[in-house]
Image 1 (cartoon, rainbow, N blue to C red):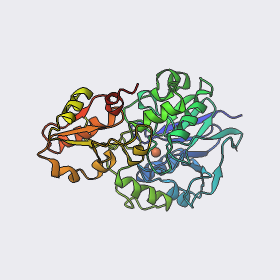
Image 2: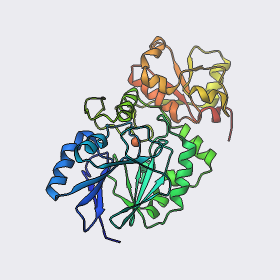
Image 3: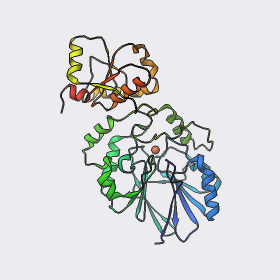
Image 4: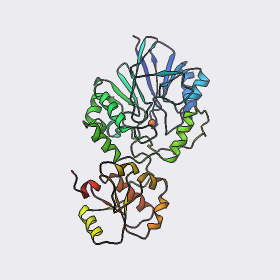
Length: 359
Ligand SMILES: [Fe+2]
């Protein structure tokens, strides 16, 4: 087998793109190109005298417009994606375990769904390109609350990663904080998403962190479904860690300081019929789940507050107490309200579980 030529293109960008091929050949493949950087890729191909044979998108992206369709058109290269990818411009579709012989170089594809239904990872000699199925270290993994995302499938994908050889070096689709690629062994030790959890525990862990997609992401998805070559087809905010769990939080929200209220204090307020607005910020589907409905509260999901904080403005002069399953989303809700001018929005420490004394 020939040696591997491998290059992380524009390592300073938060969206990671890669170039690889057999060392002794001029033919190369590009992974996850962005439309906005297409001229840089073309310059690089020209400078190195490379011929682009394959373009691989690890999944349908919701955070940037893919450069795949434009490169396919200009370089007459094959566009490879998972068999479940909705984009019509895909010319070669791969399934779990498929192998491609790239002039003697073995390229193996794994279906690694969760972040999206069509997510794939690529195994090259000594390396695994994980797309958004696995990020590095405390970056965890890509969010599962975009269309087609599934925490259940993502858990299975993570179990799959745990069974792969330790020495494979992980190259993710994103890194927002300058982390460096490292071995799967190190990820198994340091990445919190690879921590041993049952499927139910993982789903619960993620559910507590989910915000739902920002509106602009739906426009990006649509542009990618349609294989656009127009960089203006959808608006994308600069420098938002959008594919991370909780990545679409507006800037300045995390920095707000908000106060907690203990479950006992909450109960006291309710018993004394104090005048305050009690908001349950869980998703509507969760009201039919394990924790059920909170009859004393109004349900306004965090996703809905994120998309239109104005809907709560009628309560601006009231005291607000937010609650969710375990306190992770209600703290975000309280911080968002604080940033929007509410005086002292509070959140219930430990959430419904602590209030109902559920272990
Ligand atoms: Fe993504």
